[in-house]
Image 1: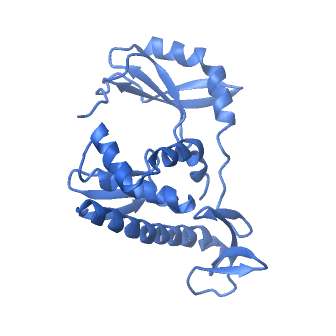
Image 2: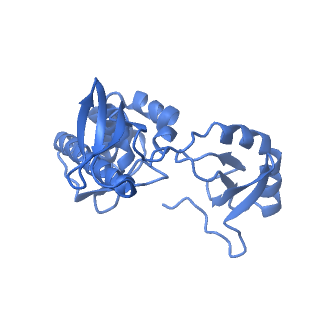
Amino acid sequence: MNFLARRRSDDPDHLTLDIDGRPVRVALKRNARATRYSLRIPASGGDPVLSMPARGSLPAARDFAARHSGWLSEKLAQVPQPVCFAAGIEIPLRDVAHLIAAGEARRGTVHLSQDAGQPRIVVPGGEEHLARRLTDWLKREARADLGAAVARHAANLGSKPTGITVRDTRSRWGSCSSSGRLSFSWRLVLAPPEILDYVAAHEVAHLAEMNHSDRFWRVTEQLFPETPRARQWLRDHGMQLHRYG
């Protein structure tokens, strides 16, 4: 069931607030399950989201947002600053800090190396291609790790997905379609390996239970017993993964 209420024809898709002297875009969404107005900062670090009841009014939404502008200012100040992919920058790979290094060769493949104990990701080619080449490589690494984790959990469940896709998803770490196709955020390869493993188990569990019922969580914990701890890690640290690239 789709719990999001249909947007009314006269609804704007966002509101603009003045926060500390600068305009801040706040996405506006109606939610059929909501009984009150609420503000949140997405884990992706994107625009703040104001959820409103299906019968809520725009004036009330604007008033709610204005009254909570102080809270919003505080939370936005805590959002991690973006880290661009460039030579000399450190990024996590499977939760281990790696230095991005520009390779001397104009051609070649992205590869790992060590320099005086410092793990490095060496990206051959010109600086203008570094960000794209590194992102493509990280996606392939994520696809390999997720493919192995999904295969292991699916075998334990006695099921099999119809396919796996790796994307730069912003609103969720993974998803499972009704056809059994699994989709994941490539940024999971930046996290501790057990966190990637948990998300793989979570989506494989949806092959048996296409919901978030108690039965679903029992299946997930059978596949990955440390589910509560992994969920808490994503709540506490997931936003950090969206800093990179």
